[in-house]
Length: 222
Image 1 (tube, rainbow, N blue to C red):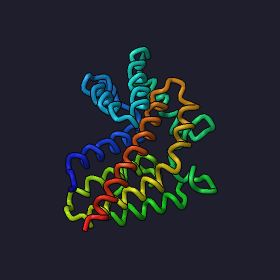
Image 2: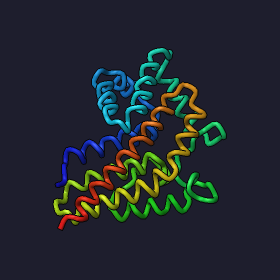
Image 3: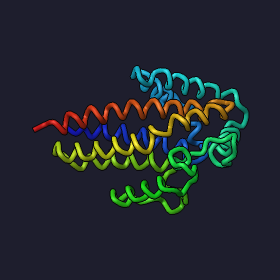
């Protein structure tokens, strides 16, 4: 059985993480992050044992936001120093830097992901002007793959879509995200993005396990 609600929730998680690591948070987004509804959402995540520690760390980081003056500007500065500068005190958000021997962006990994985007008829936003191996683009890609699964009902079709998700999560996320998390943790003095990255890593492992379980169920169904 293909559950559209589960697919929607999974896709929304990937899109949320994508937005976190793509650009600075706006004042409106920060207000939402501090709302009772969002805090309840994080509390709900912590009910999954695999996500409990990372969810609680992220929740504590949200609480600490109240102690910062000009919090939106401060977080924007954190984002810039972590993800935009490219110096030693940063956490470059491109898969190629971690997966390729030359450690350069716009490399083979970026070309592979771009080819996969074309294959699945998922376009890149021309306004963003980022290589296809940016972590936010890969996360957005997986979210789109998940939601596209709602168009199909047969076990064979669902298994094929799940296999695509497993392949991309394994090859283009979990292989390098732990290194990315380490870099963010080492260089994020306040901790908001460090705990965001930690939660992302925990979620990827959790969701990959779910995908594998569902693939096996649908793939083996006569």
